[in-house]
Image (cartoon, rainbow, N blue to C red; front, top):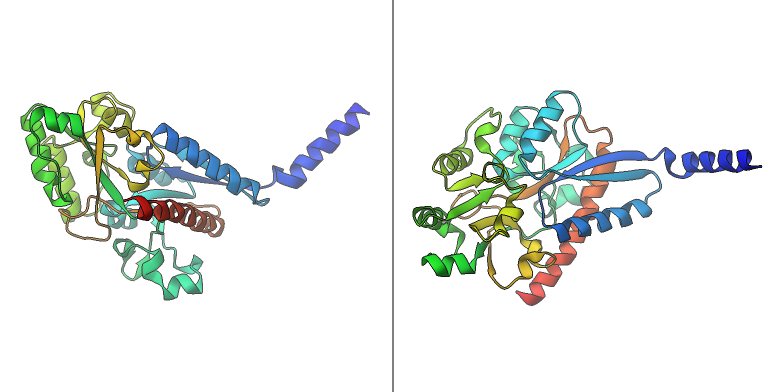
Length: 298
């Protein structure tokens, strides 16, 4: 009898979930509470979909280099997040594929609503909106007050403020991407800017400081600035009153007005691109829910 029960359970597992399509999506580093929220969101999505299973993965450091190395070896995730600074090179190096044939009619007709303009290359769409209103500059109030560093008023202040912080012996702005370690097909204005800031030790790679990611570095109270997702203020340790935040304007080419805009992209070797796009849409809606919260409190 036990044999038949075990056999039934094995067969049931295969019929009702064992053959689900496994879709890996990779995310940037995030605070612990945000990881827990991501896991909860994915769990709910998986529970409502009998044919697919989303496997989330968080890469703390140098996500773009890790993913590009995987893709060039013939593997890589179905989808991942990338910022617009690197999308031209991702296209040039054949790391990602266009989304156009997977877009709905509404998405095609209202492209600006779903595709960030910096992700449109040669009239092809390469990135899907996260639903986020963009990124934000977070700053440590205690450090700024202690060292007499002016409080930022707009994203245009970033280059000058990071230099002031460095001159005062403070770690200026920490990144989780090391631009000098990436493979480039072309060096446009935005990439040159970030490489320059890295060379000047104004944008510093978190791994070079011995931290797992930029959030760990920022919470150490040794770092003046980081750039993160604007929704982090809602569900992370940014609630602590020693941190301040100013939004970075989305969809601006001028680097002085924008550090980067995020977008979901399909990996070149994505096994299930259509199903991955469905998950992108779901995440867009979920993040938009957070944005409605922001509109009420900011």
